[in-house]
Image (cartoon, rainbow, N blue to C red):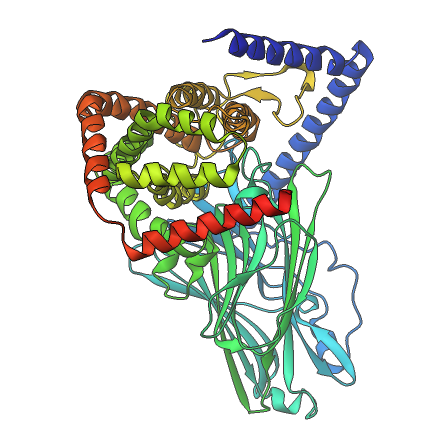
Length: 623
């Protein structure tokens, strides 16, 4: 390491120490932070106890859970006033994957828990409960708008637990008389995350006015914080947002970084509330006819990240019997799981666009899944995946190194040309290209293979943070490869701007290996001019910037880049042994002799004449 590099590292260390002391909180601030943290802990404990109490009530099939507002009777028009109050019965419908609870108040799903997953801190992974949101639809009756959320349904069903290929249903009903009733039937299959909901409206052509041609469904929820860090998700496209799909088209989404209300009227097949690794999706295979969606960030709340709303419409044709079939997916954003429904639900996974997504879907994911069948250690799987990728890209890497070696051999001649032509950039370019052409060397030979590798690198940059398979998988000191690894957390809530409040060892290893790789490459650069020197400086600055950039990213991603650098060192050492620069120099000289003896082509002559005319015009302008 040279003197300038040592000075640079010393300056960086001084800056970090300076930041620490100027941002170090006072004794009073530390005590205030401790009081705030104690208050937060107390609040979380209270919420946990409250949730435990509520869950125990929900799961006891012998108890009726009385809704807190049932004692306050809401006046409803006509016959529906009899259903404005009542006892709130909660039924459980579950399989090995999912547990849902359906409330007789509103006849809707009020709780969804994924049984095979946990939150980052080990709690049950509950997507939502009755405090997080609501679902209901509106219709007109006697010049008033009724919402099913305000109605109490009755039920004769019982709690259902199923598995394997079995299926089960629970039903809730509002019966005005034997010929007019409203029924909600919920169904669940074993080993599935999809919940079916059938809405049967019988005789409601006599209830809903003839002027009404649609029914509005209102669905809203708050997205919970289930992961350790959501700080990097915005840049990776994995922040909570709403996806939707028009019938027969590719899915689209709402921008993650803004609070947005958007009209999505048209034939809408599904709407998904996406939260990085999990999804809540409402599906209508017969399509909704219009709608709008809204997202809004929830600030200063440890429990929630964002609120989401969707309002869509179902056509009402005034038949004696109207049937609507909806499906709700409550489950992981896992590519294979979502793809099997053949609704393009897998588009909610942020795997990039265009060729980037093609590489992930067609190559990376199948390879990753294949390796997963034979081993359970995902750190080893990433290692093997890295080796496979390096082997596949080996011809391009070799081509790039060979081209760099040729450029290094020509460097003395290029320097001589620069000294000869001085500041005449046009003549410098002409003479340099002439040298490359005569030597049989392409100036893009080193860059082009590297550019061809970039889609693979970008694809993996998207894959690792979005892969639920890495979630909560430990390797070495990393407890979760889908989140950042930390070997030390700064005390007293201290945080370095653009870096964070912890030290990621995989990120440090990646940065150090990148700096070593940069040092190796800088020795092979052919330029000594100002631009080349600026490029060398930039090559050293970028890894330092990435140190803060990747510190909060997926540990699996930093681990992959570190491995890629290590294997690159090995490849370059082998290439150096395999490529004999003396023979390469002889080949270049042979190419020059062949080129000199060969008459110039018409194209080459015209090009040289054009360059000569350009130089003459520039000289006239200067005079």
